[in-house]
Each structure stands twice: as structure tokens, then as C-alpha cells.
Image 1 (tube, rainbow, N blue to C red):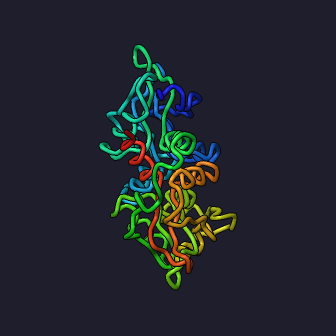
Image 2: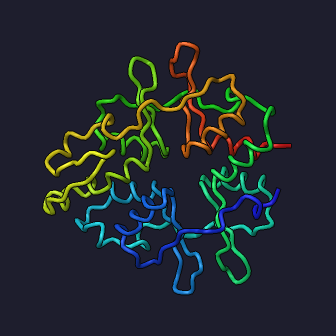
Length: 278
């Protein structure tokens, strides 16, 4: 299978001088986790992911607001690119080796033709690889977790430190929620605390209005997605890929027959399975 059969052709883009505030609004509006940054001629020169945004805001000490930070400061440069004729197994290998979640597809002269993401490769696996392996073959057994009372700043620190995109919220050994980079991006104003307090603006977190003086009260329970979709370790890996694609999620807690957390399976694990195809 070639990249052109599974890539996304309609790519949401922004320019290098786009304020980060607008970049975030585009991610939320289109429910996407990355945006391609282009130059004045429309050629891709960088990419900004949710992880890039959280990392930048967690480390930035400039005191600037989101409208004063520009895409070129936050974006990852030195793009990894492929042509539309590249096979999907080669793309999976590139993603794993480079530790990236998407590859930009370019045509002649460096023009932007599309993007292929982990979601696209998961869709391929769900459609064409049923019966080849089980969840237990690729899941991660040592899961990084937080408690429902963990502060959101601590959650951000854990995600950044461990270079992961989601963390499972556990209570009594059972998964009760998941917090992703997207959840933290939705509360990104809180990471520029001084600016936010001075502005006296409110933000919405999971549909609830949060006022500046309440930021110290934001905990994992406020941000997490409740009752996460789970899967058993004996399930077909193609079923895991199907659940992720159909529900727009990137990871599934793996549970035993008693509902206890025993692992996690992510899109990255599915990509490893695509890479390993014979």
C-alpha cells in the first residue's frame, strides 16, 4: 500500500508569523493534534503539535501572552518528509525511528501534498491486518499513572518528563479517566499564570468556566475524560486500532477480567505492528 492511498490531503496550515493563540484555536476548531507551518510560498517549513505547545508554555519564562508568541518559535523544524509513492511500512519505520507522529507528504519543488499520521496507519491496520496479532503482543505493561487529585501542573510535568502524550488516571487499581496533551492545551492559558491572573479572563475546562483564582484548584479529575474505553489483552490488535480510529483517541487502557489496569495500548504500538509486517 502506498502513502497516497491513506494520507490526508486537506491539511490545516498556518504561517510562521501566526500567533500561538490562533494556532491553538485552529487545533481546537478542527479537532486535530498538529498543524503544518508554511512559508510565504506555501511550502512546509515546520510543524506544531500539542506536545510542542505544552512543552513550550511549561518552560517559557518571558511573561508574554499567547498572542505575543509566534508559530516559528514553537514549531519543530527540519521536517521529515516522504513522497506519495512511499509504502506505508516504510513510513511506520520512519515514525518509530524518529519518534514522530506524522510525516509531511511533498511533491515536486517541495510543495505540500498532504500528511500521513499515526491515525492513517491505524486505519490501514484495522482494515487489512485482522488476525495477525493480539493486544498483549504490543501493549506496554508498565503504565505511568496519576491519581484523580494530582494537580494539572504535576500532570504536565509527568507528560513532558516521560515524553508521553497521555496518562491514565487510576483509583483503586482501576482506570477511571485519561488525560491527554489535548486536554492540557485546552487549559493552556493556565500555564501562563501571571498573564492570565492579570487579564482576569476566564477559560473553559471540560465545559466548566474556570476563573483565575481557581487555577490552584485544577486537578486531574477536572481535566480527565471519564470512563475511558478499555480493551482486554487477549483482543485482536486490529480491534484496538479500530476503536482508536472510530472514537478519535490515541490510547486504550488494557484491563484484566476484574477491571484492573494491566497495561496500555497506543497508536504508537499499532505503528510498530505495521513496521513489523512481513
